[in-house]
Amino acid sequence: MNILCSRMLLFAWLLPFSALAEPAQSALSTVQPTHEFTLSNGLRVVVREDHRAPVVTSQLWFKVGSADEPPGQSGLSHALEHMLFKGSSKLCAGEASSIFDTLGIAQNAFTDKDVTTYYQTLLPHQLGVSFEVLADMMSTAHLRAEDFVPELAVIQAERRLRVDDDFNATAQHHLNSLAYPASSYGAPIIGWMHDLQRMNAAELRDWYQARYAPGNATLVIVGDVTLERVKPLVERYFGVLPAKPFVTTRTVLELAEPGERRIILHQPIAAPRLLMAFNVPSFGTAQNQRTVHALTLLSTLLAGSDSSRVRKRLQFGERLFSATTSEYNALFRGDSLFTLDAELHTRQTISLDEAEKRIWQLLDEFKTNPPGAEELERARTQLIAKRLYGRDAIEDQADRLGSFESIGVSWREMDDEVNQLKQVTPEDIQQAAATYFTRQRLSTAHVLVGAQP
Image (tube, rainbow, N blue to C red; front, side, top):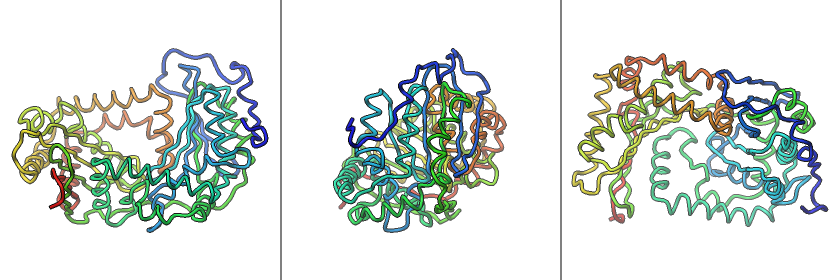
């Protein structure tokens, strides 16, 4: 550690473990104690106790992501995430990561459409280190131009590696821009390359000042802690930050029925690929949360498990596809997508048009032939098991808690998910299919083998 640069107190990791942690428990209770409070500067805090192991995760969620970026400035939020590790009033560039590594603290950050998140997994008595670093980064980051120039080159290289040179990612990016014609969700999180090439440090500083405020953030702590131990630490490090004005996030609304949209791509891949995306509501926009849970189950029923209709009939039965999957992520502030991804079997000679017709037969079947009791219960059991197993990891618990809170939905919705999934009926599935599996909501990408003719 550079003594001349660092002004970190680093007191907490020197304390005995018993000073901050309660005795570990061997099993996860049905109802986990969860506490919430808000500091005078507006920072919202959610603390969930999980005493099965002597570890804790600390996650700082900002309500700003790629969806908030104006045209011509895509990638700002992700670039700012990178730059927050380049020095602040207490830390030199890269020193935060060095401190975490020295103490054995796992740490990272990510940017999504609605959020930017910084997180660490550590021992309970090290929480003071996490809080001191995060509080300093969120309030006094340097964001110097001389640091940004080389970091921007790193970000551009990351885009080339993860998007431009990844055929799956490239196809998905094209589909997203097609599927969101009226909202900023269509822009890639990492940004368009032409926007990255003209981005500058002044834009980052403006973005930082407008969005990184205590009132625009949520601190989520999950693990072997209690409110009595955590709250004084939160107040010590975050409570001293002044309240400041910030730009309020807005719900990203998409056209409900934009009309059918299609794109044909040519890529050097092994087999043709079919991508379909339907415009659907999310937790943040659905008028009735029952719709969200029906769509979630519908994803499992369609191509979300080996017993689903598409996989059972078209992949394993007719050998039409070699791989299929359907996905629906409801954790967005704005409208979401219900997607289907299917890769033709290499031995198949039919066209993607014919393959798409076979998919449509199964989609339309849900409108007239809803799942029976056994089929629905199987999918429900699989989905509930996935949700419950996900709670084994404190990081996953914190991720869902933070996601709900950051899109304007109470964290209590997470604890009520299983109960809500149990209430979904075959008629709910049928209604969801009839409402959302329409061509007016559809975007399709046909990815063909070979170079562009």
